Length: 197
Image (cartoon, rainbow, N blue to C red; front, top):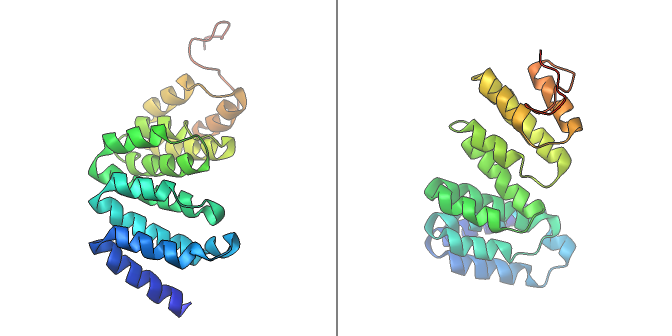
């Protein structure tokens, strides 16, 4: 434990000055390890430290490195999430474009989740759209619920309108309507055959 903490601290210091060198050291440290050992929390945290420091200086290089990491133990997913968060602070448009180009799945979802968390305070409508872009149904619904809950406490009407116009399944709509204290499915606004209240 202490050795891992010391290694992580050294890597963080190297990454702040020469992130490519830190990435090479990380590669050497993990090269001979089995997938199970590479997947430990310590190795995930090391990758996150490097990704975070590198993306502060060169987000595209950090993104390329993070996408090349092995996926076991969610090492790649965690590193990509760090890159996304840092890159969003530097250039949200470029970060968003990069995230949209990622292949659908858990890694892209990790990056999109960081977008949701970053955008929610200032632009809940955009955060809601990003939450709706997650590929995992359960996670998507959970993130949308979180956005709607926080958004509706500030602007009930806008949050409600976003939910009613969202392209989601009837089951998701029913579940998310509970945020507004409704248990029924009113359907998307303007659906043919919808009864007006």
